Image 1 (tube, rainbow, N blue to C red):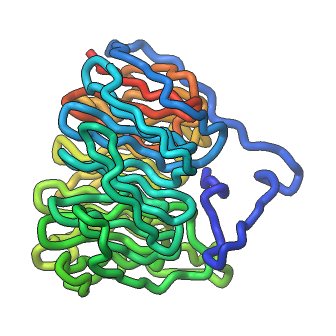
Image 2: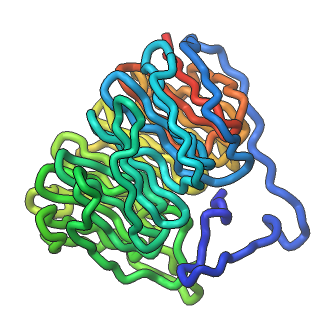
Length: 379
């Protein structure tokens, strides 16, 4: 089921939809199916990161920096934990509302505020390096290379800042539709180019030196008469897998593009506002109707689909030790076999899972809406 809490009017007025039907009946999440567990989920550690998110939709995904994972709550508490033990490395209270997840490399962590400030922290100490206004809310997780950090604004603009000083390097302004989904995909930042999806259904490659367009492709085309019918956002994070970029879109296509030639390898009609996962020569996606799909990376043939999680508002998939993992708003993690999508394990984490899951060195990290960051493995 599509979550209408994600829809916003770009002019700044929120679109409020009351209930799921005209009769007031709520669509309930599908019941949990019974199965014989084939895998064991092992809890490594769980930490209270600060303020609970409540039932808020958010994209406050943590980031890995060296041997630590850095996370923020909505009130501005940014903390770093040891990846293996969960020991607190440092904690900094910025005392300001945070609107995006953490972006990080080995030396720097970036967070952005609802009021339009971008803040760079030392990844080893949590000390503030710089804080600069960018003229509007940033709702995507910052992406970094060794020289710049790139962010997407709520108005669709792409902004590149100097990583050392915070000085603006360039801005790319995109044409924004009248209505978009709340939230935006994070850019993919390479050494010389930034690649990102836009709310108008296009995917662009920008020169990191000046923000000029290197190439652009139409991923989805607006259809219908109303603004809601014409939504074409690319909100899910693309994935680069074996030198091909796989791009998800809402009410459009899952599209494979050769980033070196800008040629489309294939298109397949899947609708999602979530990110992708890849592994075992397969692309995994959570469709907007909560069906999890496995698609052959080369041929686009569907390998399997798991349709027993309907109306559970599942997260983007993650690839963990031969399993595909998705969370849901009931607080469950579902572990699916990469081979055929069957359930192999389930784990109740306690709070709703809304943001993307994170995998590093065969450890799964999940930030739940009750304000806990949990690390686990599967055996």
